[in-house]
Amino acid sequence: MRSAIDIVDFSTQEIEDMIGVALDIIDNPDKYAHACDRKKLATLFFEPSTRTRLSFEAAMYELGGNVISVSSANSSSAAKGESVADTVKVVSCYADIIAMRHPKEGAALVAANNATIPVINAGDGGHCHPTQTFADLLTIYREKGTFENLTIGLCGDLKFGRTVHSLINAMCRYTGNKFVLISPNELKLPSYVKKDVLKERGIPYVQTTSLEEVMPDLDVLYMTRVQRERFFNEEDYLRLKDTYVLDMKKLARAKDDLCIMHPLPRVNEISVAVDDDPRACYFKQVLNGKYMRMALILKLLKEAGTI
Image 1 (cartoon, one colour):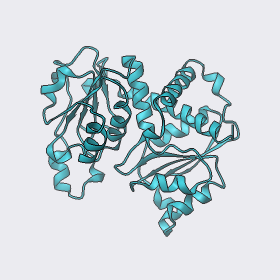
Image 2: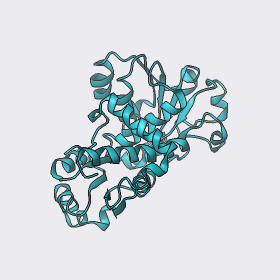
Image 3: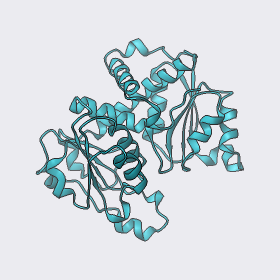
Image 4: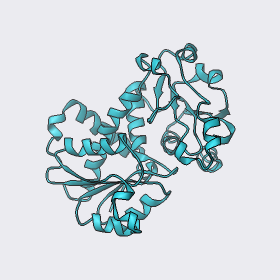
């Protein structure tokens, strides 16, 4: 049974095909309005979410399907000690496809190995978040027209940022890309990502603590929040949370066609004054996420032979 656990589960051709479907959905929504009639998506979210959960639910409804939902661990049998494996075996009896978010790395893979229906990883701890990356890729494609020869700045929490890890895995498969890793020393990109992904593939990258210094070089700037929920020490979080704040003064040195992205939620790391700048793409990114989740649901259900 095909599931979506990591962005590397999908070839570049498959991703580009899904982008093609997403673009067709944008242009011809009525064509897809009944594609998933009588099908059910189960959203199992054991960690807080607004955009991802609602995006999946909106995607399924717009395909003509229905949604059953668990919105928190406390409202499910997980509160009684039920394992992820048992939970998805049960949910497989009720639904046709599962979207699951879980605080533990690897939980989505456990779910996929035990479910009898496709499982979509909606975020597993600090590991990865493939459908956010699908949203990111559609945004980059619609804004830049290419996935090649781009200088991509990743700024903020690169240590725990699962969206950053997934995006690096996706974009390093295209030629000519360069990464600029902007973070405080405490939140640097994990060494295993640098070693196993960037160095292994010979992808050029630079590390810096200064956003202003590298701003003129960037084609894409991917801002992230410092994630309070990943810290064991409140003092460390408070010390680091406002390390980077993107404002109009910093943008004065940026390219006119810079694509500014953020997986959201935003706290303080992008000034609201930036929202009106034509280079701000983070709310477009949200909408693109719905279209790519629609394309992914269609792909997995077709491969499962249920539509």
